[in-house]
Image (cartoon, rainbow, N blue to C red; front, side):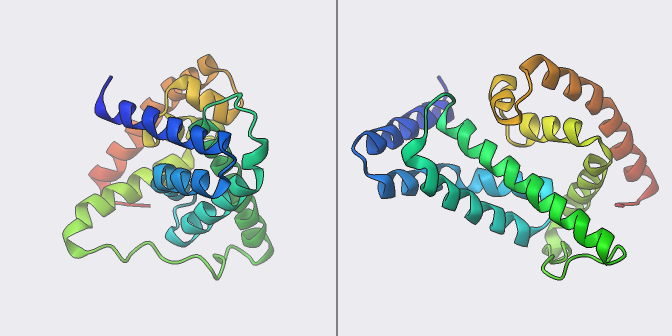
Length: 195
């Protein structure tokens, strides 16, 4: 077992011990420390906004705290937290689409621009923007599968518990999406466009 997997198992044991002791505050603190950054990265990958990603992270842990006592344990704690995060991202995307439709394609006022990267990160930032733009062109189900599998580094079984689809279906979506994603990124790199 590698160090990361071992730490994950150790963290989950600590969280479950806090739950058995009915120490919800400690369990939440441990979960925020263990999963907070990963939830933020997932939210950013799905929303493309630093502000919205932070909002999702906060909403997720409010819901985790609210529902922690009723956690049934049918999935791992990590899968449960990521399932909540995914649903909050979908809610925000739906809200964003309604706002855009209602106000003629103007971005919501609370969305901050993504162009405040340091100069030394320009190439990395450009590649990230190209990848985000190409991901946005995928069908929502394919995009979710790719983000869960590669951005969040989840196994297909873990992603299945979060997405509510079977692992084989997710694997097929990823297999079909990756060549299209690769072609899109290559085309944008060669044309110099990040949109």
